[in-house]
Image 1 (cartoon, chains in turn purple, yellow):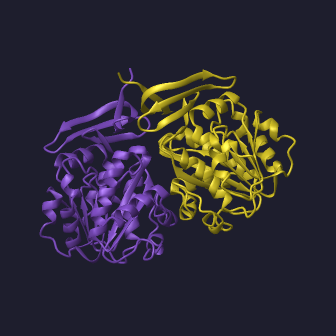
Image 2: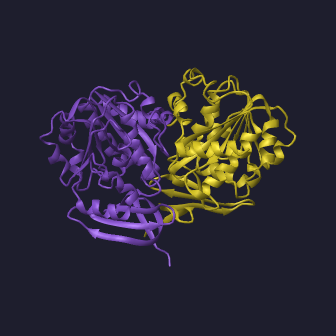
Amino acid sequence: MELWYSEFHTGNVKLSVRINRQLFSGESEFQRIDVFESEEFGRFVALDGEIVFSDKDEFIYDEMVTHVPMTVHPNVKNVLIIGGGDGGVARELIHYPQIESIDVVESDKMFVDVCAEMFPDIAQGLKDERVNIYYEDGLRFLRNKKARYDLIINDSTDPLGHTEGLFTKEFYGSCYKALRDDGIMVYQHGSPFYDEDEVECRKMHRKVFRSFPVSRVYQAHIPTCPSGYWLFGFASKKYHPLEDFRPERFDNLNIETWYYTTNLHRGAFMLPKYVEDLLEEEENSL
Amino acid sequence: MELWYSEFHTGNVKLSVRINRQLFSGESEFQRIDVFESEEFGRFVALDGEIVFSDKDEFIYDEMVTHVPMTVHPNVKNVLIIGGGDGGVARELIHYPQIESIDVVESDKMFVDVCAEMFPDIAQGLKDERVNIYYEDGLRFLRNKKARYDLIINDSTDPLGHTEGLFTKEFYGSCYKALRDDGIMVYQHGSPFYDEDEVECRKMHRKVFRSFPVSRVYQAHIPTCPSGYWLFGFASKKYHPLEDFRPERFDNLNIETWYYTTNLHRGAFMLPKYVEDLLEEEENSL
């Protein structure tokens, strides 16, 4: 018997992963949730048929959205994670003793419960006493929040699914208001390689570049993402991701990582020419 | 009708590309050669069932093996390309006026002929008057060459196919001898992500690190490579890829690129922790 999970990265390219067995399949109020066990990626979760993380490569994503802003902002006390119900981002954040609270806003309780059962090593991040989970829509949660957070990590991945509202100008505006005067927002910037992804990537940069004084993009190689290449956005009211970067903030804590290093931090902002060009085109079109 | 090209990146992961039509299929003395036309990657060539380049992403590979060493070595006059029968690397090299000769050693004449017909824009690189093509085995070609080249680019991709001889200690030793006292060798270092690729990647680093005074590894994101992530080796008798890097050597020539920038040059050497670790383990095991 052969069992293959296939995911279309575009209408004309697909990635297939050999499956040992399916561990869970359910339909929540918001989405279809599947968990598979594979030889190459270990266990992985697909939401509406798109891999959101796997045992084998989640470290790349979780480390990159966390340690990059934490090494730039001098004193993060209050963090908001939008999405993040799997616990991977929280697990990285709890290494920092100066953090006082981590609010996780995840609309889908079934997703949190499934991850807690199937991915205990990742989900343990949510057990820290500084973590509070709110089962709510991210946009609604943000509406009355003013100058309350030092760091917002938008862990929502899909600009077209039920989380569409988390990729609008209104949403970025709400994040801006919810941040303190020196706050940072980190968000998914998609993959720039395939034409259809490039369109979304451009739109996103246009919206954020307009909303924040500092708006830079950085990269990582994530095998299960379209074309294996993923971008993150770093939007900030004050701090620049390289000029205000202080490696000792990370190095002094002896945090064990598999992807992030303070050397890689700098390299992650050195983008290919075609990516630089598309971002600049959007900046100049404003 | 649906027509799909599929390639196993490991025994448990495959990438599939929707095909419009097959343009060529032939069996040379050395390998099976197929050319396909696809929506997403334009035309691409597969050798023995592995994509070696596509219209859409060849620029990444060709720019990265060329401009990185050319911006480090102060005066490259004589270049040897082992493999490179498609012409992509030569096309990048001919931008440099100081280069006097480019020897291309390609064992498979059918591959050169097929590329010339199917990829004229790429193959035009071989028409420059400084280029000489030798239809020979790379290892044999190198045997009597002493201190003749400033730069050797090993464009052979497969450590297990008919080009296996180009990944041996003997081969790296021959390259060392064929280089002048300040020569540089750039070569394919494979993809480090999947376990079976990691094994080859480690072996390669052990061999080269032992043969050259300077041995560093750099990276690029190439969608058609396993996991979308590819490494290159930079081995050198004298120059260090960052300490001896002079951006003006590239910037003064106004070469148009889509991937390489002198900023990205630095970033390409800033590797993820898991890659740093595996390279260091091999260095320390000697």
